[in-house]
Every structure is written in structure tokens, then in C-alpha cells.
Picture 1 (cartoon, helix red, strand yellow):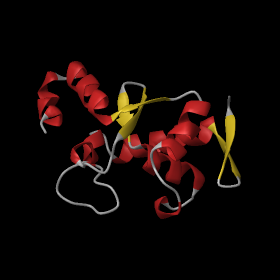
Picture 2: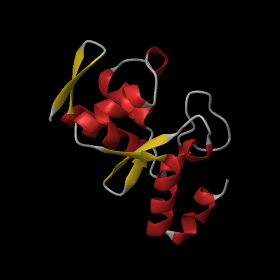
Picture 3: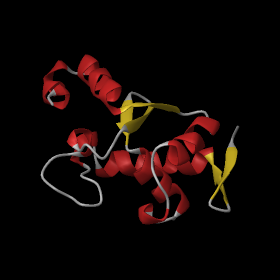
Picture 4: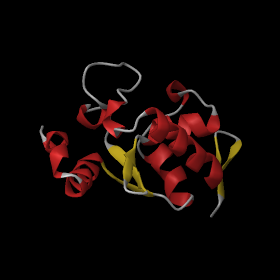
Amino acid sequence: MSSVMFKGDLVIRRGILDAMREYAAKHPDTNTFTGRRGGSKGWLHNRSFKYAVWHGGRAYPPKHILSKATGVPRGEFSGGSQTNEVFAQLGFQVIAKHVAKLKLWDQDPSAQSLCSV
């Protein structure tokens, strides 16, 4: 599927890909994104993040990407199944965050710190 309804608006796959490109340009190391509350650790270490969108060998924070693609503020929708379903319907792979960390470590063993608890 190349489009899906979310919060009354049409979301297209291309919009998600554009948001991912913007994210990757701003965060070459995916873990530099710290989420809404900030903090010293990246989103891959933040317990409030449970899932990642895996695309093109990178992990993306689903709720952040969906917010950027739609313009809907993150506080106006929940993560988890509400967000993940949009990605799944658009053909993206949503995985548990700990699996994403292992995939990143597989690609680059120097990223071992991502796998620490």
C-alpha cells in the first residue's frame, strides 16, 4: 500500500521516506536523537521507546518520523500499535528496539555501546 489514513489525513509512503531522509541528515548517528524530553542518552537507550522502523540499514524512532511526515505533534497520538500500524500498512518493517540495536551492532561492531543495558 502506498498510502494510509492517519488522524483524518492521508499519509503517503513518499512522505515517510522524506522524513527519514531529513532525520538521517540531522542524525547521521541514529542514537543522537534524544526524544521530546532530551537527556544525555539517545533514544536507543531510552526505555520509553519500544520499537524502531528498520529501513535501509538504519533504525528510526517511529513516532518521531510519523510526526515529521504528517505534521501531527507527537503529543497528539500514541506510539506502539497506533503508530506501528501506519508503518506496517505502508510496507515498512517495525521491529523491537532491542532487535534494532543488535542489527546496528552487527553492521558495526564498534557500536557495541548500543547493546548495553
